[in-house]
Every structure is written in structure tokens, then in C-alpha cells.
Length: 247
Image (cartoon, rainbow, N blue to C red):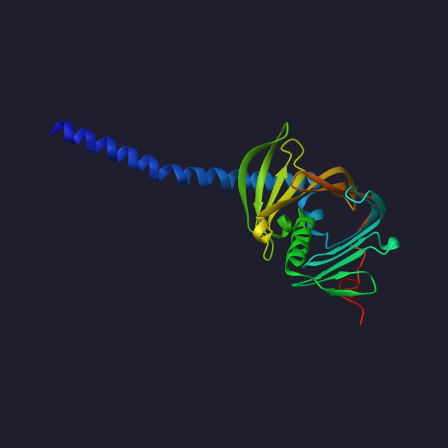
């Protein structure tokens, strides 16, 4: 009887440990998530300054590594899911528009409804450009993914789930609390899935908030393009017509 009682006691203790461990882990993750986001908002310029960012107009140059050319680049962002991207418009390049759940693509004079995959990619691009502002407004569900190693860097991982977008992996430099990289997986039909990623660099302030002025885009390990922003304006008062095809 004594042996049976001892075995029963050990089993109960093991069961308690197994059931209690996930709760403690969840509490630890919640605490690390809160600390990380608080550190990010402070590093970017303070929660109040970040929350005031409602629109951004950025211009610069894009280098297309696949085609070996370069040209002008423009990006116009407004919170509540509005985005306009102009890629080499001076060379008859592409324009992409996002207005809520609707998207268009084409040249500046001829835009057509965006295909589902491209629409999803525009929602993804809007969503990561909305960081860290979305954290200040609690716009998207977010969870803590722990510490990960990319190359020779140890980074903190946040998992963000915007509606209409694949889950976004946000890699944060724990030393600076700035975003180093964002990525997401896109379904490619019979070809499986592919990771699209953007690495951030050259942070500079505008209206008291830090923004990356260099963005390098990848598909898997293939470097697609690099964007260098020469100007960035916060809350410029962008008209709604900028995000929709001309009548």
C-alpha cells in the first residue's frame, strides 16, 4: 500500500507539472510580448508620436536586380488600408493601388482589378508598413515567437495576423528594438509556397518617428530589388482619389 501510495503521489506531481507548465510559459510569453512592444514603441519615438502617424508619402529610387535597371519610386500610405505604389513611372512602369479590400494594378493610365495573389501581397505590404503604428493602435493580433537566429544575428520574433494577409513574421533587433526584417509565405499553387521578405536599414527620423530609408526585397534567397528613400513626409494629407483608379 505504501508503494502504491508513493507511485500515486509521484504521478499526481508529474501531472501537475505537465498541466502547470503551459500556463507559466504562456504568462512568460505574454510578459515578453508586452515588454518587446513597449520597447519598440519607445525606440521608434514614443507611443504618442507613433500613434499620430496616419499617412506617409515617401519617394526615392528602386533598383531592379532581376532586369538590371533602376528608376523612380513612390509610396503613399494611409492608415485603414490604403496604399499606392509607383514603380519607375517615368519609364512606363507599374502602379499598384489598394483601397480597403479592393486593389488595382497596371500603368498609371490603364489599371485593372488586381488578381487575388497580387491583392493579397498588397494587403501584406500595407500591413507591414503599418508597423509599429498598428501596435500603438492594437490593430492586429500579435504573439511572441521567441528568439531566432538569422545568419549571424539573434532576433526576437513577433507573429502578426492582419486580416486578408498571410501571417507576418516580424524580426526585431533586441538591442535597438527596431524591425530588422519582415516576411510571409505565399501559396503558389502547384509550385508550393514561396517566402517574400523585406530587410530594413538606414533608419532616420521624420516627425519624431524613425522610419527605414532602405528596404531590400527578397523572394526566398533571391534578391529582387532595393529601395532607397530620399524623402519621407508624415501626415501630408493624401486625397482619397490617390488610392483609386481615375474615372
